Amino acid sequence: MMIIKNRAVIEDDWQVMRLADQETVDTVIVPQGKVIVPLKVWLSQRDMLQQRQDIGVWFASDERPEDLKADIQRFQVIAIDFPRFADGRGYSIAFNLRMRLGYTGELRAIGDVLRDQLFYMQRVGFDSFEPRPDRDINEALKGFADFSEVYQTSYDQREPLFRRVERQGKCAKA
Image 1 (cartoon, one colour):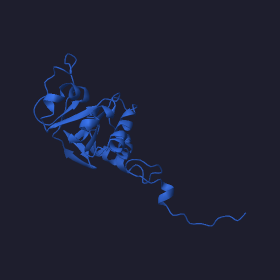
Image 2 (cartoon, rainbow, N blue to C red):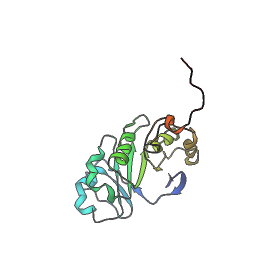
Image 3 (cartoon, helix red, strand yellow):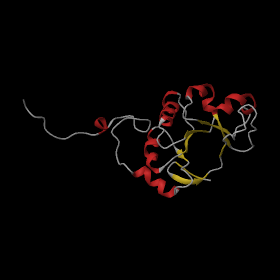
Image 4 (tube, rainbow, N blue to C red):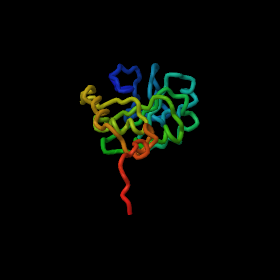
Protein backbone atom coordinates (compact mmCIF):
# COMPACT_ATOMS: atom_id res chain seq x y z
CA MET A 1 0.00 0.00 0.00
CA MET A 2 1.30 3.43 -0.94
CA ILE A 3 0.48 6.54 1.09
CA ILE A 4 1.49 10.18 1.13
CA LYS A 5 3.56 11.10 4.17
CA ASN A 6 5.20 14.49 4.64
CA ARG A 7 4.39 15.32 1.00
CA ALA A 8 6.13 12.24 -0.42
CA VAL A 9 4.75 8.96 -1.72
CA ILE A 10 6.04 6.10 0.41
CA GLU A 11 5.26 2.44 0.98
CA ASP A 12 3.24 1.93 4.12
CA ASP A 13 3.65 -0.99 6.51
CA TRP A 14 0.57 -0.25 8.63
CA GLN A 15 -2.68 -2.16 8.06
CA VAL A 16 -6.03 -0.49 8.77
CA MET A 17 -8.36 -2.94 10.51
CA ARG A 18 -12.05 -2.70 9.70
CA LEU A 19 -14.64 -4.94 11.34
CA ALA A 20 -16.65 -7.33 9.22
CA ASP A 21 -20.43 -7.42 9.75
CA GLN A 22 -20.33 -10.45 12.06
CA GLU A 23 -17.39 -9.23 14.17
CA THR A 24 -17.75 -7.36 17.45
CA VAL A 25 -15.31 -5.06 19.20
CA ASP A 26 -15.08 -7.45 22.16
CA THR A 27 -14.31 -10.64 20.23
CA VAL A 28 -12.43 -9.57 17.11
CA ILE A 29 -8.86 -10.85 17.01
CA VAL A 30 -6.32 -8.15 16.22
CA PRO A 31 -3.67 -9.59 13.87
CA GLN A 32 0.06 -9.35 14.54
CA GLY A 33 2.09 -6.64 12.89
CA LYS A 34 1.47 -2.92 12.61
CA VAL A 35 -2.29 -2.51 12.86
CA ILE A 36 -4.47 0.58 13.13
CA VAL A 37 -7.55 -0.59 15.04
CA PRO A 38 -10.91 1.16 15.42
CA LEU A 39 -11.14 3.28 18.57
CA LYS A 40 -13.94 1.05 19.88
CA VAL A 41 -11.68 -2.02 19.60
CA TRP A 42 -8.93 -0.22 21.52
CA LEU A 43 -11.34 0.85 24.26
CA SER A 44 -12.80 -2.65 24.52
CA GLN A 45 -9.51 -4.59 24.41
CA ARG A 46 -7.18 -2.01 25.94
CA ASP A 47 -5.85 -4.33 28.64
CA MET A 48 -4.66 -6.87 26.04
CA LEU A 49 -3.49 -4.39 23.38
CA GLN A 50 -1.58 -1.94 25.56
CA GLN A 51 1.36 -4.36 25.75
CA ARG A 52 1.92 -3.99 21.99
CA GLN A 53 3.99 -1.20 20.47
CA ASP A 54 2.65 -1.86 16.96
CA ILE A 55 -0.93 -0.64 17.50
CA GLY A 56 -2.43 2.54 16.14
CA VAL A 57 -6.00 3.77 16.49
CA TRP A 58 -8.47 5.23 14.02
CA PHE A 59 -11.47 7.44 14.73
CA ALA A 60 -14.81 7.25 12.98
CA SER A 61 -16.21 10.67 12.12
CA ASP A 62 -18.74 10.50 14.97
CA GLU A 63 -16.20 9.72 17.71
CA ARG A 64 -14.55 12.20 20.05
CA PRO A 65 -10.78 12.61 20.52
CA GLU A 66 -11.25 13.09 24.27
CA ASP A 67 -12.11 9.37 24.50
CA LEU A 68 -8.42 8.63 23.90
CA LYS A 69 -6.99 11.42 26.05
CA ALA A 70 -5.29 9.19 28.64
CA ASP A 71 -3.49 7.07 26.02
CA ILE A 72 -2.92 9.54 23.21
CA GLN A 73 0.89 9.82 23.32
CA ARG A 74 1.46 6.06 23.29
CA PHE A 75 0.46 5.74 19.62
CA GLN A 76 2.87 6.15 16.72
CA VAL A 77 -0.07 6.72 14.39
CA ILE A 78 -3.65 7.89 14.79
CA ALA A 79 -5.94 7.85 11.77
CA ILE A 80 -9.23 9.58 11.11
CA ASP A 81 -11.76 8.04 8.75
CA PHE A 82 -13.59 10.16 6.19
CA PRO A 83 -16.62 8.03 5.25
CA ARG A 84 -17.68 10.48 2.52
CA PHE A 85 -15.94 13.37 0.80
CA ALA A 86 -18.61 15.75 2.13
CA ASP A 87 -18.22 14.68 5.78
CA GLY A 88 -15.96 17.29 7.37
CA ARG A 89 -16.10 16.17 11.00
CA GLY A 90 -12.65 14.61 10.68
CA TYR A 91 -11.11 18.06 10.30
CA SER A 92 -12.33 19.00 13.77
CA ILE A 93 -11.12 15.73 15.25
CA ALA A 94 -7.65 16.30 13.77
CA PHE A 95 -7.46 19.89 14.98
CA ASN A 96 -8.52 18.88 18.48
CA LEU A 97 -6.00 16.03 18.61
CA ARG A 98 -3.18 18.41 17.70
CA MET A 99 -4.15 21.66 19.41
CA ARG A 100 -6.15 20.67 22.46
CA LEU A 101 -4.73 17.25 23.29
CA GLY A 102 -1.16 17.85 22.08
CA TYR A 103 -0.78 14.77 19.90
CA THR A 104 2.62 14.86 18.18
CA GLY A 105 2.74 11.54 16.31
CA GLU A 106 1.65 10.71 12.78
CA LEU A 107 -1.89 11.82 12.01
CA ARG A 108 -3.35 10.04 8.99
CA ALA A 109 -6.45 10.66 6.87
CA ILE A 110 -8.12 7.46 5.62
CA GLY A 111 -11.33 6.66 3.76
CA ASP A 112 -12.78 8.88 1.05
CA VAL A 113 -9.65 11.06 0.80
CA LEU A 114 -9.31 13.05 -2.43
CA ARG A 115 -6.80 15.51 -3.87
CA ASP A 116 -9.12 18.46 -3.22
CA GLN A 117 -8.91 17.86 0.53
CA LEU A 118 -5.16 17.44 1.08
CA PHE A 119 -4.28 21.13 1.39
CA TYR A 120 -7.01 21.68 3.99
CA MET A 121 -6.27 18.45 5.84
CA GLN A 122 -2.64 19.47 6.19
CA ARG A 123 -3.77 22.82 7.66
CA VAL A 124 -5.50 21.09 10.60
CA GLY A 125 -2.59 18.77 11.38
CA PHE A 126 -2.64 15.73 9.11
CA ASP A 127 0.81 14.68 7.93
CA SER A 128 -0.05 11.42 6.14
CA PHE A 129 -2.82 10.53 3.76
CA GLU A 130 -4.23 7.35 2.29
CA PRO A 131 -6.03 8.53 -0.86
CA ARG A 132 -8.86 6.47 -2.28
CA PRO A 133 -7.46 3.46 -4.15
CA ASP A 134 -9.27 4.41 -7.37
CA ARG A 135 -7.32 7.70 -7.60
CA ASP A 136 -3.77 8.37 -8.78
CA ILE A 137 -1.64 9.03 -5.70
CA ASN A 138 0.88 11.11 -7.67
CA GLU A 139 -1.93 13.32 -8.95
CA ALA A 140 -3.14 13.73 -5.37
CA LEU A 141 0.27 15.15 -4.38
CA LYS A 142 -0.48 18.19 -6.52
CA GLY A 143 -3.25 19.12 -4.08
CA PHE A 144 -0.69 20.55 -1.67
CA ALA A 145 0.20 23.27 -4.19
CA ASP A 146 -3.36 24.36 -4.97
CA PHE A 147 -2.93 27.54 -2.89
CA SER A 148 0.17 29.63 -2.31
CA GLU A 149 -1.00 31.53 0.77
CA VAL A 150 -3.45 31.17 3.64
CA TYR A 151 -5.36 33.96 5.35
CA GLN A 152 -6.62 32.26 8.50
CA THR A 153 -4.79 30.74 11.43
CA SER A 154 -4.75 26.99 11.94
CA TYR A 155 -2.44 24.24 13.17
CA ASP A 156 0.06 24.85 10.36
CA GLN A 157 0.02 28.68 10.55
CA ARG A 158 -0.53 30.39 13.89
CA GLU A 159 -0.49 33.97 12.56
CA PRO A 160 -3.17 35.41 10.26
CA LEU A 161 -2.01 36.95 6.98
CA PHE A 162 -2.56 40.54 8.12
CA ARG A 163 0.02 40.00 10.88
CA ARG A 164 2.54 38.34 8.56
CA VAL A 165 2.55 40.94 5.80
CA GLU A 166 4.00 44.40 6.15
CA ARG A 167 1.78 46.85 4.37
CA GLN A 168 3.13 49.70 2.29
CA GLY A 169 1.19 52.80 1.51
CA LYS A 170 0.03 56.11 2.81
CA CYS A 171 -2.85 56.74 5.11
CA ALA A 172 -5.43 59.17 3.80
CA LYS A 173 -5.60 62.41 5.78
CA ALA A 174 -8.98 63.40 7.12
